[in-house]
Amino acid sequence: MSTLKEFNFKNQKALIRVDFNVPLDEHLKVTDDTRIQSAKKTILKVLEDGGSCILMSHLGRPKANEPEFSLKNIVSTLEDILGVSVLFSTNCVGTETVQMAKELRPGQVLLLENLRYHSEEKEGSVSFAKALSELGDIYINDAFGTAHRAHASTSVIAQFFPLKKCFGFLLEQEIISIDKVMTSGEKPVLAILGGAKVSSKITIIENILDKVDHLIIGGGMSFTFIKAQGGSIGDSICEDDKMELALEILKSAKEKSVQVHLPVDVLAADDFSNSANTQVVDIASIPTNWQGLDCGPKTKAIFHDVVQQCKTILWNGPLGVFELDTFSTGTKALGDSIAEATKNGAFSLVGGGDSVAAVKQFGFENKVSYVSTGGGAMLESLEGKTLPGIAAINE
Ligand code: AMP
Image 1 (cartoon, rainbow, N blue to C red):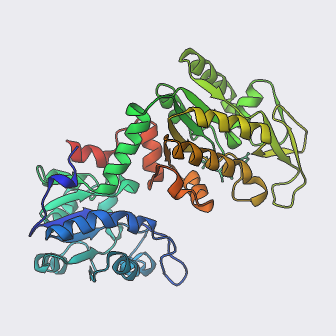
Image 2 (image 1 turned 90 degrees about the vertical axis):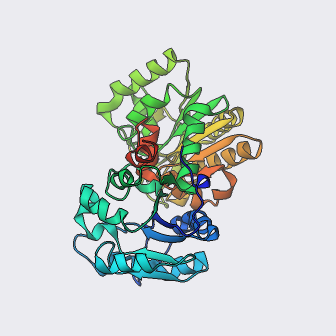
Image 3 (image 1 turned 180 degrees about the vertical axis):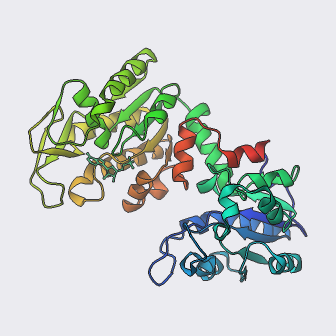
């Protein structure tokens, strides 16, 4: 793995693909700067070596060059985080950008305008990638959030830096964390999969059965398994067309000696709202017109015990409708359990969309070993896919 530590950036211009795809409010102010914070270490390493940084990213999904997708909106936040002033180029290619890059001095940072203002970025255009590549001396990919995309700036560009390309600290950390769970983690290894649908996690489950000793299936997706086994799930969310598959997964887990843990009780509600009437019931005996929206106390205790037994833990997907306070306790309890196991020496990785949101909502970020910054990229890694952004550096 080619990493940042192998390079000295003195008098070098580092062309860094970062993921500054951050949320903005209606005044175009950054509301969550996690992704910018995450790139800081890589940028500072280059500057401290005596080099300069040319930062490139996308922001949102612009159709034309709408100003609300301009990366100019993040400049002041970036300056605050880095503690240095940041030059901004109103394009990411073209004569003026080339000139700005050329004039960049050691210690300076230049941020390029949104790559996706050019359709060639997503198309993976070789000529566009070449034009970008001419701005810098060394290419660094530090954008895990787009590592699963074969875009011009994330993978195509790497061919123009055959010997001068590497991962940034963030991407390196993401790769190491996933590797710990998928191949080199201390046993027993546990994967916790929750969330709404089995269908969105099938490939992950199939891939992960070869890697783990324990599998917890929670949240909305557990009802497909319970119904497939003959349980009554009332009005709980269920994918009837995936019931056959659910049984196959359970059979395959047994053959592979993976212990599967499903919820045994639920907090059922008569409405999908915070003010619904609720009752704790056996998961296989949910009354008609009631739906399971969180796990029950017995389940919390069982899951807690499983988590404490394991030395490597992956968590993807909430155990209930955590966005509603009334149904957030199962997800929060799981977070507590993982935090405790981590404190006792387990490695814990939280990744992929809503579980990251849950971890942030409940303030667990610093109590788990690693919180992934990439949603889709994380899920594709768990599916066992080779990510183009990673392959391009390793080639
Ligand atoms: P996913 O994107 O598949 O990880 O699903 C995340 C969503 O699953 C969250 O918005 C949760 O509210 C939802 N969810 C979790 N448990 C349940 C449940 N028992 N019933 C309905 N939705 C659920």
